[in-house]
Amino acid sequence: MGVVTEPATRKRPSRARWVRRALFGAVLVAGLVVGGTAARVWQVARSDDQRPADVVVVLGAAQYNGKPSEVLEARLVHAQRLYARGVAKTIVTVGGAREGDAYSEAEAGKRWLLGTTTRTGDAKEPLPSDRVVALTTGSDTLGSIRAVAEEAKLQGWNSAVIVSDPWHSLRSRTMAQDFGLTAWSSPTRRGPIVQTRETQINYIVRETGALLYYRLTHAPANDHTVVG
Image (cartoon, rainbow, N blue to C red; front, top):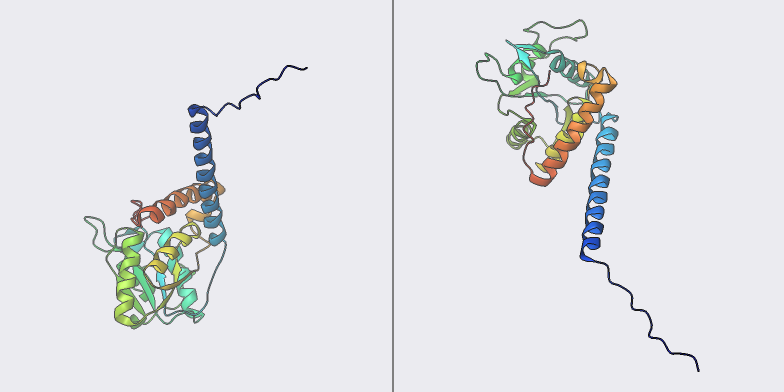
């Protein structure tokens, strides 16, 4: 008769192996989340939704003694074109002022739209004063969008087309929707932020991190709206 042998017992994975598997899984999931968010930032940056809305919102950027920076002026030119196409009957400029500034970003934007400050050759005819609303509170994107949402409740606005730079579109639109606005994005395609591939990659990385931080905390990622 053959010798009966006991079946070999399968060794259980060691604790260290379980830890390694868990870490690998966590890294994989994190990579998929970050990669998916970056792809979404890029996708929305390439879209331009100009459907009719109650207002066009111009997010703030740097201004110099009431004169918009190149970044802000590019946004204002685009917003004015949307107004001329009948996308909305009102343009809302947003953004506060830094310490020592004579004007806020919102005021600088309104002055430009009304033709009371220097305008480039791309500018169309100045807008009537009752077609521009300046909201001078907000030192970051979240604060500015919150100010728009609060004003929307007072004015009866329900929808908005947000004008910013392409890479900023998804985060600003997400914030507006979280505040109850029906929001779309129509980014500007000009200005220093969209001129070089290196700059574009840097902003996609930045916005991916900022959007993930916002989704986790519903707090701003310390990103002052002044850019450039």
